[in-house]
Image (cartoon, rainbow, N blue to C red; front, side, top):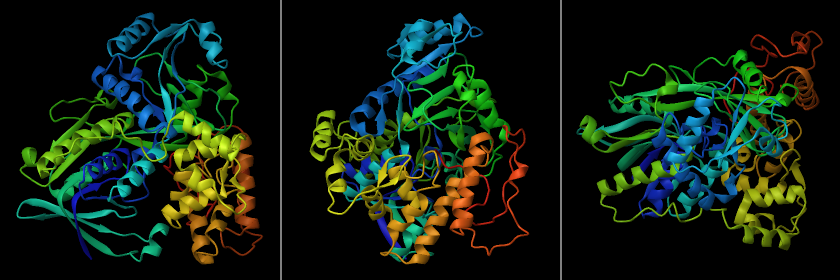
Length: 580
């Protein structure tokens, strides 16, 4: 199977989808391929912070300036993905006045609005802050939904004539006469592909130019092309709490360190993070002590975290880029700026460009830079418009409120539906049939699930990232079966059952490092609902084989948790990476 395109973008994260959108809007013929779902890599495993730049105002001011610039852009073009929570850099008694002053001056030098607050003023904003904090700096941090943002970029790409292929890992980079001419992909047997008749097929996609936007995986694509891309993957753990203990991004005002940020995100709070270099972006240890450290350190800022319920953890890998001969040993010292690698000039290999480094907040700027480069290479005479044209779903607050009034969307659930859908709410929610809530935790209705299925096919994990269904407190315990029910009778029962199993398995992966206290009881309930009542493990009843929940300490464990046997069943306990 063969096809051709103008530009082939590898990578379905924020940068890849941003590049595809930018080039498609310029009139280029664009195809994007992604090895898993959109956000499969680093983008889907982040804490959801929309940077003000304050975190880099001392150590990396160029990155800080880029962040505040793009912070302002994303508020305009992606309003349905952004919650402007504000942020606080909080000084504890043991944190130095010298660094606090450097942070304040650095913010002002980088054009980041910064205001010093007394401890009383800081606790007026965030009542659960520790009683002994000294003061805080207020900055315009925010929270952003990376899943919704990437889907919106992909939809915009398709709206402008582009092609987006998920579950299509690159197996080879095609080189002819010393020039990259395309890639070979294998269409996997993922749920979303069955109805397209491509499962298991190999496709050669020929292109005038190939863009490697695979983040921490950029070195692998470079290796396929015979060039070196010096990415240093650095893992970090995030811990998801059961509710929003804070409504403002809370940062520790100290130099680089682990466990120094709490991000309110949708219905949860996400604690982060660590920074540890790894060899492989997919194969690295996920250890219990990393989860414990998040809580032990951050409860010094927000003491109530020690009493809260942890519902899941996940690990992400940063695509840090270290230019040759810099010799930096500590990954926290590596700049968060991005770099464009023109393999023609750099490696005498025309036809391919890589984009590495950077931050999620600067994804659009990165996409503009590489799209300018590709356009020049291909003779495309069009300017970037992505800083001015809103993403699908984003409109101003007046339109949002008018639509809420028109649909009577004043209940908490209805308001959340409208906020997720933005200006698509009319077409999605205006249905003749009953529209019950499928996911009670996140307030997701059947109409939203059906809309996501129309985009994603039978892949319920793709439905999840579009709607947030199954990402709340119960982690799919009560809604995953109902989500699968929406697939039937359009899809056969076997397909719906397999889609349900894949979704529940993905949810379970992130829970295995949080099995203590009340969360252990929640896991036992989910097991009872799915492995027994629904027979999700497909096993006959046996009296001699039971899950030994007595092996779990009622308190927080000190060693890595080993759960139930299960292999590929819905209650297997292999480690997971999926964000939120």
